[in-house]
Image (cartoon, rainbow, N blue to C red):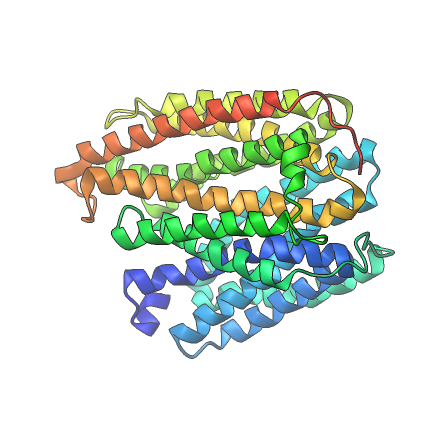
Length: 427
C-alpha cells in the first residue's frame, strides 16, 4: 500500500525497512556510552519521546523521502531504548533476580512480535498503512509518564567521562557501509562497501585502544572472556535464526501454496513458544549456570535447523509447525540466560555499553542472517521471481541456507561453552 500510494519500486520500498534497521544498529553503541555518562533513565525517556514524535509525523508523511527520513529518526529513538532497556533492568534488579526480569522482558518482546503481524494486517485492512504509526505515537508519552513514576533514581556510573565524537562517527559510518554492503552481496559495489566497513571498524578498534575514555571499551573483548564469547554466541544466534522466517515464508507460500495470512499464522508458533520459554529460562539462569542453559538452547536450535535441511515439495505443513516449535524452544532457552551472562560480566560503569552491545549483536546478526539467505537464493535462482520452473532450485537454496545455519549454530555452541564457568554477577 505504501508502494502504491508513493509509486515506489522494490528497491526504494526496501529502504522503508532498511532505514529503521540501519539507524537502530549503528547508533546503539554510542548511545549506550552516552547513557553511562548522562544517565540511562534520561536516555531511555528521551528515546520514547523521539520515537513517539517521529511516529506521529510519519502518519502525515507527504512523500517517500519524508517517510524514510522519519524512519531513520524512529530508529535513533528505538536505539536509545534498546541501548538502555536491559541496562535499566540490570541496574534496578539485584543479581539473584536479574535473569527473571530479563526473561520477562524477552517474553514481552516476543509476545509483541507474535501479535504484530496479525494486528498489523487488521489495521492496514481497516485503516490503511498510516495506522501502523498510531500505536507508537499514542503510547510514547504514557510510557514516559509511567517510567517517570515507576523508575526511581538515575544511573550514570561513567558521569564526567569525555564522549568520543570522532570514534562514534567512524563507528557509525563503518557500520552503515558494512551492514548495507553485506545485505546486497554478491554485487561488486556490495563487496567494496563491505570491505570499507571492515577496514573502518579495524581503524575504530585501533583508535579506541589509545583513548582514555573510548566510546567502546575494546579491552572488554580482550580481557573479559565471558563478555566476549557471550556476545559472539549472541551474534551467531541471531545470524542463524532471523532469516528462518523469511525463507520458510517463501517456502510455505510458493511451494506449499499457503496464503500470506496462513503462512504468517503458522510462523507465529516460533515466537509464541519462545515467549513462553524465555521467562522460565531467565528464572533458571538466576540459580544455575547461564552458560549451560544457553549452550543447550543453541544445541536445540542446531537440531531444529538440521530437521529443516531435507524439506521438499512433499514435506507436511504439520512437520514445519513441529520444527518451528523446537526452534522456539531453543531460542527461549538461549536468549535470557545469555543476556543475563553478558550483563553480569561487566562493571556497573559499563552496563549501558553492554546493553548497547547486546542490541548491536542482535541487529548485526539479523542483517547477516538475511544477507546469507538472500545471497544463497541469488546464487541458485538469480534475480528472477520464484515460479514453477525454479521451485527445485529454490528448495535446494533453502536446504543449503539451513545447512549453513546448522554449521554456525555448532560454532555458537562452542562459543557458549568456551566462555567458562558461571557469571560472576559483577554488576
